[in-house]
Amino acid sequence: MSLTQDDVKKIAHLARLSLSDEDIPDYEKELSNILGLVEQMNAVDTSDVTPMAHPLDMAQRLREDVVTEENHRDEYQAIAPSVENGLYLVPQVIE
Image 1 (tube, rainbow, N blue to C red):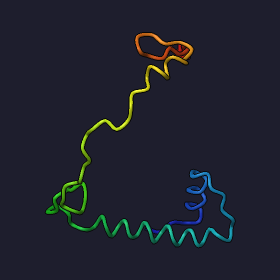
Image 2 (image 1 turned 120 degrees about the vertical axis):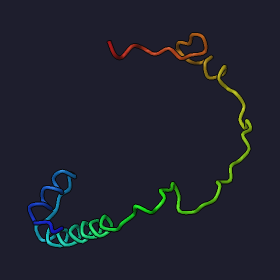
Image 3 (image 1 turned 90 degrees about the horizontal axis):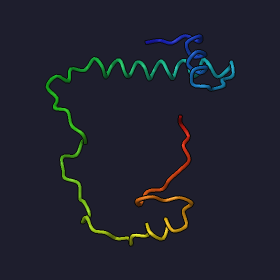
Image 4 (image 1 turned 60 degrees about the horizontal axis):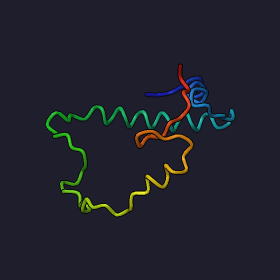
């Protein structure tokens, strides 16, 4: 797919980027190359490929699920302006 200079200007506007006029041809070429690569990848037949979440087929090492920090909730709520039933009360912001 080939982009025009107008396409690049529109993309830059949508992305809120400021491009100088002398940079536009370079971006036009590079973005067209990227879109060409995407077209090549879309043309590949992947019907026999099993979808996977990660390219490495191995289990993730996990740490033990143990408590490592003390519970300071009561201390933090003691200095809060307003607390009820263990919850912080805040002013209503949406009516």
